[in-house]
Length: 360
Ligand code: PEP
Ligand code: MN
Image (tube, rainbow, N blue to C red; front, side, top):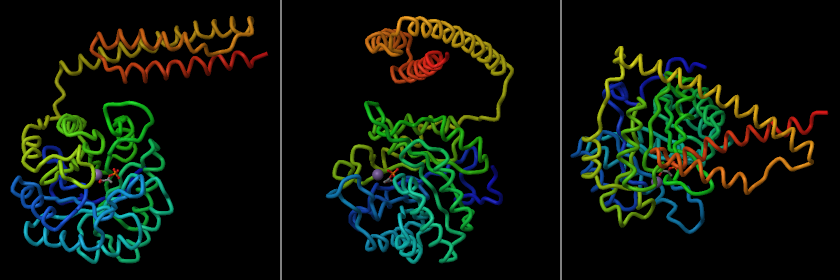
């Protein structure tokens, strides 16, 4: 698919070697906190300031954002520091009030982009306001659904938005993980493959959910050549009214940013090609191994059918996962990775065995 005629989110940045950096607090809380954070970020060289004015909370009773009043603080940030300002919008009224206050970049949050009615309402509001030049970034929906994400982007494109981009902030899940929202990098990579001209900004803060993961996730994002980073930064993170565990001070942010390595991704040396050939060979062997494993699995399926046994024996499955994961961790792979691989293999085995059971 191609979204023709897209413009950069911010002129001159977001190209290789010059990532787009957006930073600021999860929420604008007070005028003092907003301005103090903004001034310190500006001193560190940040050019785009983010702050949530309306906050979607999973449960009622949390801080739901300061609302309209905070837009005046963003205006002051712009006037005083010269930074561009960005905030989240979730409905027509937010769009109208943010545009009225001169907000430069709007983003649609993960809970909102999962709702096509809300996204369409935002797109219509932008069209009605004739605001084609405002930049709009669409966070991935909370659930890992690429079509839903692309659908939201298309609604904005169809409303005439050309400064369009995506924000990858990881995906919700149920269970245990070191991440708040595991990245599932293959999804934004597939988005890039499908719409190569679309800028993709990575949000390591909501992905990691804790300060110590921000730096490593920023580096991973740049290593994968994403367009930029949106990072939560607060003047006094421990006192933040929302998302305090993942916010870093502007000074820590400056250290993180200056330690990032920008790799020259255009280089394609001979030794790299040789390594890639090795990867190709290993992948071929892996495919063959998977195939052999499935053949055995189908044999087991036949056996189970003849002896009227159920397809899944839970204790066997648990033992298998435990021993393989332990071995993988010993070799330096992550437990999460190995579990995901084994679960996928197991699902396919079960599918094939059920096929055999249902065959006459
Ligand atoms: C945010 O950026 O503060 C936010 C609410 O993020 P998300 O929509 O990714 O949860
Ligand atoms: Mn937040």
